[in-house]
Amino acid sequence: MRIVFMGTPEFAVPSLKALVAAGHDICGVFTQPDKPKNRGMKLQPTPVKEYALTVDIPVYQPAKMRDGEALAILRELQPQLIVVAAYGKILPVDILELPAKGCINVHSSLLPKYRGAAPINWAILNGEDESGVTIMYMAEGLDTGDIIASASTPISLEEDAQQLHDRLAEMGAELVTNVVAEMEEHGVSSVPQDDSLSCYAPMLSRELSPICWEDPARKIHDQVRGLCPWPSATAEIDGVRCKIFKTAITGRSVDQAPGTIVRADKKGLEVACGNGEVLEILELQPDGKKRMAATAFLMGHPIRL
Image (cartoon, rainbow, N blue to C red):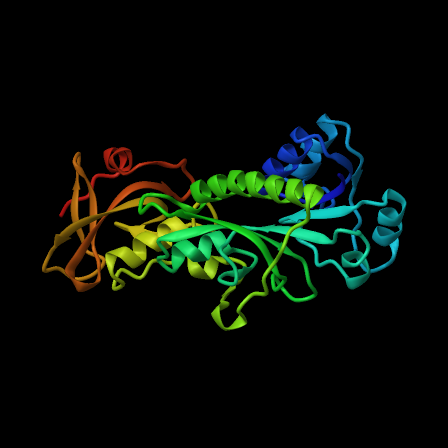
């Protein structure tokens, strides 16, 4: 099938690779404009662009989608289908209506739950035990289109947002490839979303980072997992501001105030939380230093209890 692919970050790359491997005619890739990065502020191509160039797919990076430029390019390319995965731009109606087989989106949640920019993170932040991917037709609303297919997966209590992201990216690639094959062979059916079951997953910010030790251990554990790797949960450990990257629920209880360090030795670093629960800190990053195991942090910063 003749397809235009639209995507930007790492999440989108497996879907593009899978469509290429399936033998579809990817006649063009749309991705966000290159952005300056690091100290030298050198323009950095998006992950999708980097891959597309390795397989000689034409890349287009319009700054806007509503000024006619993107529409003109698409009319020239004449795709039968547009596949979108984390593109980061809203498509206007004239683009949505252009391909004969429509526009479909690879979304990293089990719609209608977690519409929006950060569904993977919010599923973990909210303590969900299941996530997944949804392939849907695109509509004018935010992730409101009819659902074509979905696939679910359990969320491990030890899994952080980056790990779940990587698994869902591969799941999305497999699912969208299957959907496109069905479209090509005999067409697909779809069902409307139940808007009453929807919830919004807004963009993340550093305002979510500070840990409140009065929260239960599970809630803090989910905060650490859901904000990893960015913006990351943060806390002061014996006066040192740290990003907290990995924790474990001990199942133990203590009669000490939330935020009290209850263990700091070669066996680990543990902090009292709400309800007397105890959370173990496994990996952290003190300001100005690299990410490290908590035991390594304690070697350079002994804590007396």
